[in-house]
Image (cartoon, rainbow, N blue to C red; front, side, top):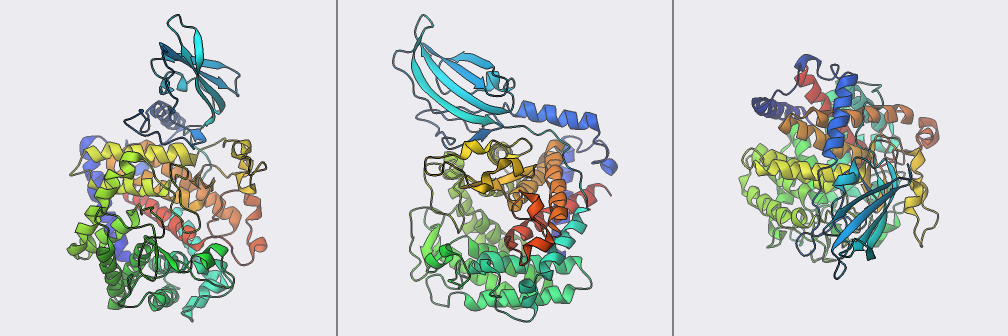
Length: 564
């Protein structure tokens, strides 16, 4: 984040906190917000989290509201399941058998898809075998409506790990450590990627993150500001140079994949395809660089990307998720969940005055409201995974990003506030592990009877956040997206529990960074393996370390602001 962007960010915080404090006291004492959280305060946060775990998250109703949780393994919030009605049944007995206390927790309901709210607070953390039995008029069992095993996950109960660094110092150390990597520092002299780091096969994602990271670092480091600016400019110039030419169906879009010798098999297989939201991420990095350098070329490059988005937007408001670079036609029927595109287009309109793009952003916003916001199908959309349907691969990033967009519009649309909080609850319910992760056995399948090592859950470095069902393992950028959403929710609601959750994840990030030797470790597990001496060329994801830096720095700015 550039200096100009940070000033804009802090000014926004001032307005938001003033608005929140008009409705209720934001904090007991703004000068001692975090330090005032004693044992009683943390216990109150836990009690609040337990009470909130009774709030349903978009419960399904047959024929009316789809059930999104068919592939879910764990729940913090009381769920309900798509069990069918049994003909002539007079009622249903719900039986939850806990593996932790061997207890039977039961209640009766008129329908088999009842929320587990009546017994939820009594279920201890651990595996649960759920059975729903159909009852006749005499209360006798006449059949089984359904059964399922799931993990009753732990609600928030901080404090967890204590921070070992100030957040701004942590961010600076991360960015310095990135720059110490030879392949990273090489961008100061060359505008081509090193052959040593294999993930340069994803240029928009990885090289674009270098531009953003070094713009951020230039604002934090006096001594290396010029070096950071050189790295950012050469990385951006490389992306501009390899972008599709004027007149192409996707003119000025940078590629998602390159078939590099040391790259991944996925990148080689998809070298002729483009994932449609990545150019918006690159466009945002160009704007960061324009803010820092005042070089008009980068603003122009961002505008060219925005114009192509405006020309290629589908009538219904979104874009195909993946297209052929040659003609812009869709590879599959899946559509983008275009949160990144909305943020990019709105930034151009509101920060720079290019309001002609706001209409495209609003149509994309409406598409999300009419589709994933109604269906709750928050499809995992990553360049290195396949397509998914029928809720088989949900993720946390898109719903958290859309929650932020809803919060930012909640002044004019108060009804958006509840929707945003529901999305944040959903992401926490499915993807945030505060403690006691689900057992590795939950990942056994007929195809993989011995689950992958990434599901050695005993080694997960909690509290942490998981990425997507298809890679249900702790990733630093997943925690970063949660930090940002919790912070935004605190700013708009004034609820300190949100801030406590953001701080808990951020504090743990500093501990993980200390163990890893500088760079925020991508994989928040098996931390003993993350040492500077054992890694050599750092094999984590540069974009994840950058996203984490942004969320940590924003949280630092907020805390500095309210503690003045």
